[in-house]
Image (cartoon, rainbow, N blue to C red; front, side):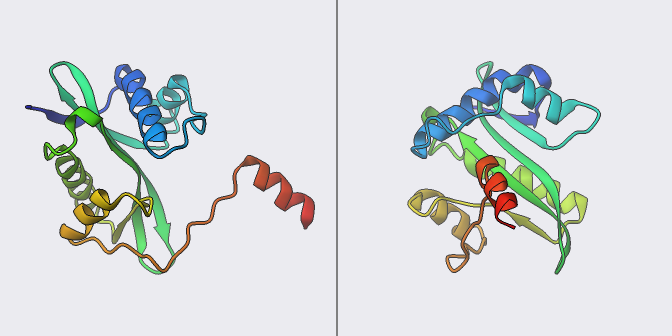
Length: 159
């Protein structure tokens, strides 16, 4: 199946949102998606742009996406964080995931970042194998720490 990759537009955000929900189901977090299409439009294209998004299109539909944003490392300097790279189920195995990741890496190189970070769930062996085959280091000795909204409130109550 042929596809093309381009910068996302506000009109793509409904399909991007569907991909985000598809990923949540795949990762067994069906009810975790709180972000809305309107949030994506505001945060990705408004006056305070919080992320950049690439979409992959095939036969007039969005079949993949990569969403990233700038970060700063106290050890390295400017870096980018790849929040999600999603390929719809029907396109998995087509090379689209590698093509999207390449687009992200090219973007990072163009920006002159020192590192590109992302997370992968520990049971997603196909993704881990792909990333390692391309030269990425999967840090199995680090734990990801999150404070969700409830955790933020709990933290503030306890100090």
